[in-house]
Image (cartoon, rainbow, N blue to C red):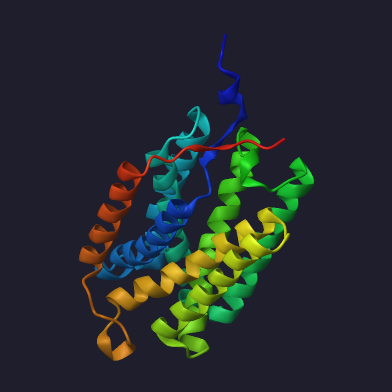
Length: 252
């Protein structure tokens, strides 16, 4: 007889501290990795977006088709969303001339629309219900919008708002700490708090990534984009191998 426990598990990991650590590292890698292709390789934002979009689509299809939760595939798909989000946001903000504020507003609207349609279709946007192809499609589309928004929002905060990379990292870090406090000490919706935290980790990763590889004259450390990306990737792999993540228990 099939173990009924398998039927109560979603295809995403439990939301634990290690989840957030890997998520922030993955979003930082998305920034440095996206810059490697679009800037260091001089392929530009549009070609970079096309390349990463292919990886994103392949990873999402594999994630939907495979049974159960598989850490390496899951995080590979997350990284794919962060890299395509980086180049796509940069293309919209810079090449199309929308600007950071305009790009952030547009992407925030698309993110809210995705969550709204998801909720209207399935009655919930809880990640603990991500166990069917339809829910997974909504999940990954929403994540892709959130990752793209994070790049635009991080750039807007660091450049247009004038906080710089370190100042922006502090701003987003404080906001995440407030969400953590709300999780432990209030009765606010856990689903709402999850998505708020998920969205904010992206601009945090974006400004940290920029801080690592941007020139010192721009407030960065001027590290090699290649080196920073490799170090982040190795760190993520070590975390996945060291901390055995479990699938989240499906809520009904």
